[in-house]
Every structure is written in C-alpha cells, then in structure tokens.
Amino acid sequence: MSSTLAAPQAEVLADDFPLLGTDYVELYVGNSRQSALFYQACMGFQPLAYAGLSTGLKDRESYVLVQDKIRLVLTSPLKGGTEIGRLHDLHGDTVRCVALWVEDATKAFNTAVERGAQPVMEPCSFEDEHGTCVRAQIQSFGNTIHEFVERKAYNGPFLPGYQAWNPEYRPEPVGLKYIDHMVSNVDEGEMNTWVNWYADVMGFKQLISFDDKDISTKFTALMSKVMSNGNGRVKFPINEPAPGLKKSQIEEYLEFHGGPGIQHIAVATDDVISTVRQLRARGIEFLRVPDTYYDTLLERVGDIDEDLSPLRELGILVDRDDEGYLLQIFTKPVQPRPTVFFEIIQRKGATSFGKGNFKALFEAIEREQELRGTL
Image (cartoon, rainbow, N blue to C red; front, side, top):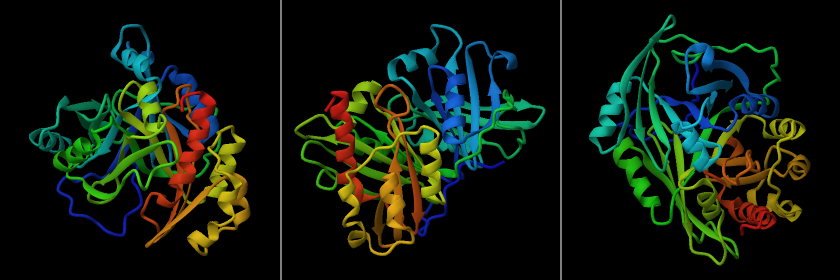
C-alpha cells in the first residue's frame, strides 16, 4: 500500500529512528463531509475510505482522501461534548495527527517513550478482514500528536474500522505527488525546545536554520530551524516569532489557532505550472508577490527550464541553491481563521526551502494581514 513518501534526498543521514515516510495527516474540521468535497473539487483528491455511524462509530465521522502518495483524513464530531469538538472549538480546522509509517510501531513507540516522549496511545493491534495494523501515538507540540503506523500485515483500503468510499463524484487529480514538508509554529522561545525534542526523541537532524536577519521585513520577523529524519522523507521546519514593529504572521497564527500547531503543508508536484493552473481554475486562491519580483528573477536565480511568462502570470516563485532550483507558491488560508494553508512546490535539484523568496513572500503575507486588520 502506498504511503506519503517524499523524494529521496541527495544526502542520506544516519538514521537511528527509521521512518518509512508520512502515512497520513488527519485534520479536525467543522464539517468533514463538506471539507471532503472541497478537497475533491478544488484540490483533486480522490475518495478512499470512510468511517462513521455506518461503520459503528458513535462520536465522529472521517473521510479519507488520496492523491498519489498523499493521504488526508478529515474528521468531525457527531455530537457535542467530545474531545474532537473541544479541540476544533479551540483551534478551528487544524492538523491533529501527523502519522508516520514505520516497520515496527511497538519498537518506535517504546524507543520514543524511553527517550522522553509523552505517550498518548499504547501500541495496539487493530484487525478486520483485510489483516492487522499496529498503531501507537505520542504527544508533540501543542495539541499535535504523532502516530506510528505499522501496516505490513494489512491490505485494506486504509485502516481497520474504515470501509471503502466509492462515490460517483470523482474530479480529476491536479498532479500533487507527496508531502514535501510540514511547517509548525510554536511560541516565542520554544523553537529550540522542539528542535531538541525531535533530535533527542526521534533522532532527527537539523538541516538548516534561519534567523530574523534571513526572515524579516520592515515590520515583522521570525526564526526557523528545519529538522529532518535520516532518510529525508519527513521534514519539519519549526518557526517561532521574533521581535518586530508589528504582529508577525506567526503571532497571528498562534492567536487565531489558540496555540502551537501545523501552519502549512507543502505538497510536491512534477509540473507546478500545470498544477497551479488547475488549482486556480477550481477556485484555490494564492498569495501574490509584486510583479516587479519577476523583473530581476533570472538575474538572481540564473537559467531555468521554464518560461518566465507563466510564472509571472501565476505568481510562482523561484529560488536556487547549490543543488539546483525550486519553484513554489502558497495558497491563502483554506478555512475562515488565518491559520492552515498549503504550499505547492516543485524541486529541480534544490534541497532548500526558498530562502531567496522569504522577503517577497512575507511582504505578501503582511498585505493580507493588513486587509484582515491583524498586522
């Protein structure tokens, strides 16, 4: 069964906590049925599995969608007074669980707990007619949890307890391939705490760091460190706000989200121009940088395979590092609160995260904040 593996990286780090990839990402949402239609119609995800009243659940309903190696689980409560409802009331639509695909969930859980992780769910076997799956959970930043998923003895559509979901409505995919990275926002002064947590508990290594000199505008700033597992398939940039003249995007996120959490999910494509055209045609709105960004783009990044005209038309950003270049663009928030959004990224050799675009991007975010009255 496919999982949300990322592309292999040029440099493979020593991996003392082996992860096979991102298994799925679960979001708590206000209306899972309507959210599923959004991700189908607007972002090209395909229906995969369902769990709810008809499968024996009494407290929640979940829809599972897939596009290539990306799996999203959208979950809503079925009645008042549930933990799901409490967390959604606090955070709005939010990433609750980043599930990690492992060879041995019990070993991964025990290792993490021995290294200081707080357990959420002890290893447990779940069975149905398709086989057995072992799952275990630990606590991460804020109300985010990590689940270890062992599915080598399971061949069902998703997980035990879910049934195949086969609606007639199936819009075409838009070319999204896998989760490239997921960016988290934490409180000021907490970035290094969680950098150390991922290093000590999960065996992650720090790939790169950015300070307020790298990521700043006239008004706001932030700091960030990028943590990666050994094979490079799971990457978590971790942001914290830095002092500035006005409220930064990180502070805005923390205020409206009600604490730390996943800020955005970066999803990869092999053809960002085609993917963004399709997403725009389906109603997805993107941040725009000033048109002048493109006047000196080729002087900054050198020769690229793409024509400049469609990049300018669509607002796609380009940056280069020692390994190659990347193309990226960011959606506006995909729910009422200015919290969770998506990045669409195409890597053409580059292993970095678009440092050369930070200033233009953050100024674009500040223009949106000004429109919202939260800058």
